[in-house]
Image 1 (cartoon, rainbow over the protein chains, first blue to last red):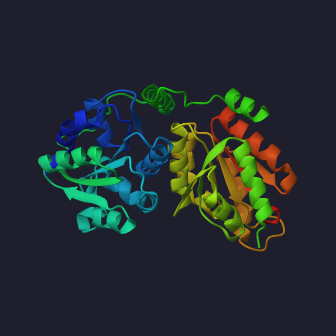
Image 2 (tube, rainbow over the protein chains, first blue to last red):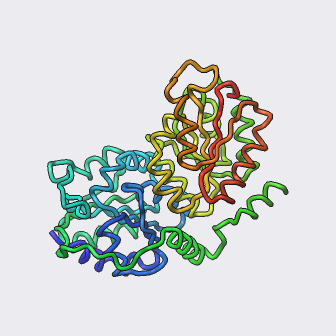
Image 3 (cartoon, rainbow over the protein chains, first blue to last red):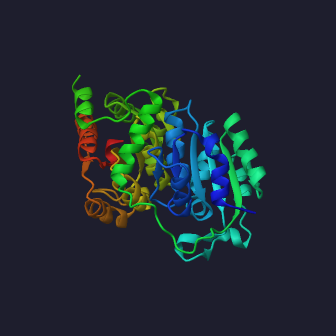
Length: 207
Length: 164
């Protein structure tokens, strides 16, 4: 077993500039410390990572999209796995840090603490490249392979709970600001405009 | 049986409005629409297994520069409420919600859905328009999309079974 922040540190250079969709909670706290900046979107709907990741991966099929998720979040939206297994976007990498608890909600155990197997569920949903790792070396290697080969990739990292008892968010994040910054960041990577103002839409309808 | 012509008209309106990405979950009345959608090269089509994921899928596609629509029955709209509030409204994401209006005027099925659909949309502060005549489809779809981008939120079009 290893810690989430150790895992995230070890993949920092692999992820490089890839857009990251980060689940609400400790994954955000750790990742935003390790790779701060506009390339991270802090999700608000628990479990929405696989779904938002799928949409973005389909819209930008040439670019690796990273979802940093947790066990509680994945359990909230198992439908997301089903649709990933059906659509199979090659460029999506979903990393699930499984600490077997709702760490931000009082450390109450999740179903994975009682035998639910997320990898088996992902495979059952049709995601062939699904695996679980419980050492830092195996985790880094799995993420390396995910960046090198077509996906979708579903990597479950068996981690121990965070050492910190008090959850401190690095700064209060305005969601509207976060989403505009994120979109401008992706525009920068793509080298083209993605955000449309209402006036653009109106004009395109009149033409 | 839903009409192929109605389905073609609605898809043409979506295409004319620049929509290129549609996530869907079927209703019997939407079967033709989804069948043609799935065969079309004009759209990326994502068949869902629960409607709420569609709010996320459309949000992700929007971040990638796509104009998006989520096609579903009104039961699915109720399924999607948390995603609509904590993703689409929270992040100010424009998208079209194309909602088959079960329990609408003249429809004996799902009387509770018929009674709760519009009050729920109103409570969510989502503008909604009734498509009860296919001739209105171009104006409604184009207008609703413009409004979605102007208001920075989802806008719903309620599809009466009769128009399909």
